[in-house]
Amino acid sequence: QVQLVESGGGLVQAGGSLRLSCAVSGGTFSLYRMGWFRQAPGKEREFVARISWSNGFTYYADSVRGRFTISRSITKNTVYLQMNSLKSEDTAVYFCAADNAGDSSWPHWGQGTQVTVSS
Image 1 (cartoon, rainbow, N blue to C red):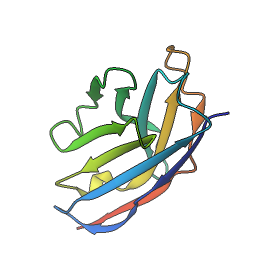
Image 2 (image 1 turned 60 degrees about the vertical axis):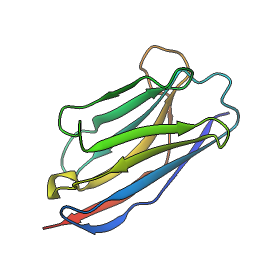
Image 3 (image 1 turned 30 degrees about the vertical axis):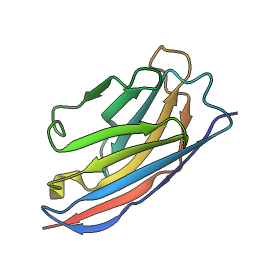
Image 4 (image 1 turned 90 degrees about the horizontal axis):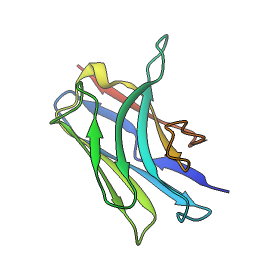
């Protein structure tokens, strides 16, 4: 069974950077896509970025394109989210997710890691 554990969240000033990590266990043979989502208090969970496990193709939400970079290490079974030029609007709990069916149902989720950006 796929398990995801996020790390790297914390408090950062606006304009700063953070790198989130998502460790994948339980095997990666069935992975189709990995993604990052975020949820701010009182808001719906929103898509941030995704990456195809096999070929590394990436896609970003308009709000983070040019500032965030998603990547993965196949050998380390880890997905990363490099966040630069952070804004207060980026404050949220960030979740790692896995899609092993190729249908964007995202059945596997991590526990989340808090990112707080101070102004």
